[in-house]
Amino acid sequence: MSNYIMPANRYLPNTNDVPYNAPDNDIHKALASAGLVDISFYFCQRPWRRLYACPGFDDQWNNFLPTIKVGTGQASALSQATDELRFFCDGSAYRNPADTHPLDPLASRCWALKTPDVRLYGWFAEINVFVVHSIGNANTSHGKRGHQKVTSTVRIITAYRGSLPEAAQKHVTGSTLRNVFTNRIR
Amino acid sequence: MFLRIESDKFELGYARFLRRIKLAIQETFEEQKNEGVSQSSIAAELDVDRSVVSKRLSGSGNVTLRTISDLFIAMGREPLENFSPNDENVNINITVINNNNQFIDGFRSNTTGSYYMPPTQRNSILVSTSDSLLHSFPPGPSIISAEIVQSCVTTSE
Image (cartoon, rainbow over all chains, first blue to last red; front, top):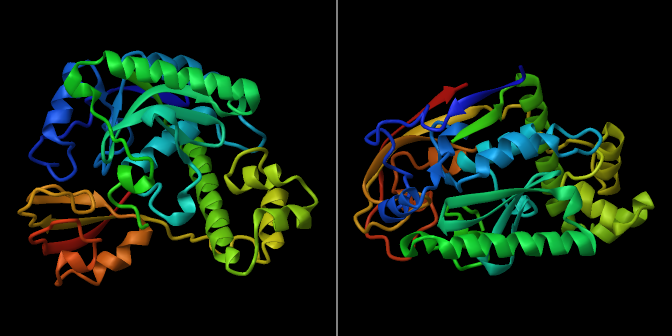
């Protein structure tokens, strides 16, 4: 077995232990009551940034992600995504100016975390708090057909976000990295 | 919710290795931009399309030692000059006094904790252990006070 299954709350610490980078209590409550799950602790025991997953994301992660075909010499899709989210959560990714490529602000205030072969689509509920909605294959997101696919994904995400209770619909409206990360160098 | 996480140390190690190479490539490219290097000039040097260079700079596409080496040389540098082998995890314990409930580089309100410090951050924090936090973190819009009252560094993993 090259991988294992871990419940989301396995590393949930006592809230007294990690008060420093917890998301705003209101947005945390709003997202949790809307059925979204804080999955930051899957990837990092002391997350600097937080990740929430929409219902059904685990199905895509467990069943669709491993089927994504990767380029020659690239790590497996599962490794790419695991690695990406680990460095996202611990705060070291997207900090340097040279790091600009992996994150694209998409239309409708949706964003994509990018690895060479995987796209993780979602939105920022607040600064440092990313809600991951769906997974895409980077290799089919180029060209006219790819553009249509991404557009359709964005439409689905926007519709889903719009269907959430009002408090959980809150999201970052800026489109620069400074709008979504507090530890950006510039 | 259950997620199947990659835990194979070789698979994860390889993904991390590629990430660091990608970062070294991107940092080199940023530095060499000042010397007049551009995606077009690299494409001309390598005799490939500019879109290929764009892909390689972002770590996408087919990756081989040859493509990595060629990219560095086309940028006028030796391969992996920027590659740091000592990228260990470092945690720092600090206490932040922030009376204004504003975010200071990720910290909200009065907080104490330990967090992972990326290598690029370390110097700025370590030199400021007995100084005001405002000197080491970018100041927020309306911070009243912020200081590190305790600081120590531990290594983990």
